[in-house]
Image 1 (cartoon, rainbow, N blue to C red):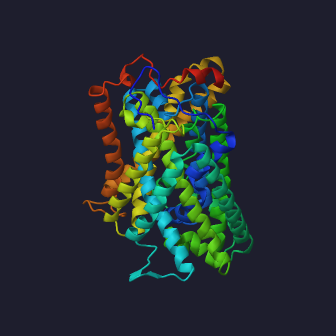
Image 2: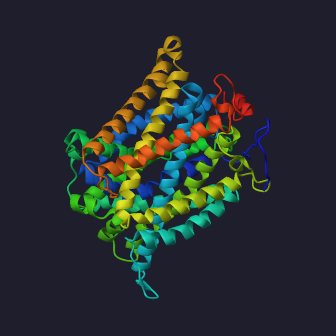
Image 3: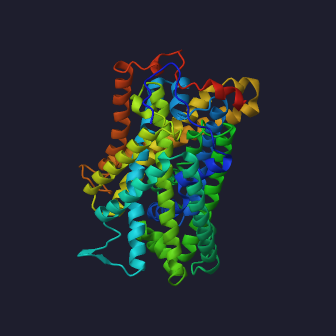
Length: 497
């Protein structure tokens, strides 16, 4: 591994990925099977039998965000994506905060996915008849047990990510093929044979119980789509930067199809009470309702594969984002060390895995896995909405001249991203206010509004503290208005046009 100090010539990543590889990274990061297996049950607890409606509704602003990412990537492909684009077009402090909250949110996501992976493995052990190891009774609902098992898997996939992103992408492609075959088969069978009658009211967002339920359901659904932008984190490693845009949009549309299929299938097979009551074990319960063993275990295997792939896919874009920030000297030099052997930010990748394992251990203060998932998803949903909104506003600011030059392009490049940003900011603000007014005391619990609000606020506040350190202590050129940064990647700009 090379120990590269800050230099005028920034380190470069090895370009070796195709569109398919980018789709594999983004689809694994989005983790449709995990979102369907866990996220649908959590969301149903908020919106009832209106999962298709909320998934369609959440897709609209996310599509506007994806358009902003694609257009910004076309003119300035960069591994730092939102961090660089918001910093240039709006404000460096906001740009740094976007980069920072994405890092913190992904580490939190990795921590909870570590536990989900462990839970799937313990459930599989139970299906195989293994209920005890030594004197310990295996419990897939125990945060301690699931975290311990998941950390072992996290270490393994982190080491795989170090050895080369192409290797990681191939592994993810294989896992995705298995997941989607199982998911399409079981969901298709569930839609045909489910005991609950299909209803068009499932697609009616006006039938959702309350405005608070709508807002929380929307942010939970945005969280389900979160990860498509991982395709843009490898835009310096694809052979053509435009391939990152194609991969991101392909992934997003694919996720919409899978989420609609899964939500309709779940509501055909399971009652509202069953949907909301099984949490991390929702997909296993769905499989048991449709088939006998050993076939009923296939959705659980798919969930495990999805969780494993999303662990690795979470490590990869986070390490690239921190690589870009390190090039600008907003983070320390360790994050931009590129392995001479593998052409990856190996040291940073290992550190991300270690951080995620440490946070997963801290999550043990929340003893029930379902509570930890709820707390993490709500916190990450709010900061992801903020990050997406700022990136979309950066696109609207950068391309605002198109409103005068070509109104059609102006609508696509300015109006739609701005409307998407305002929708997400409004949802996040409303949900934050509802959390604040829902209780009068603080408690570490998934149903305590102050706890649910404090977590994302702490993520955001820590970003401004870290930005102050980068500006005044590290004296990063990123904060000098009007100056370029070490992350310009000028050799890519001409290939993207």
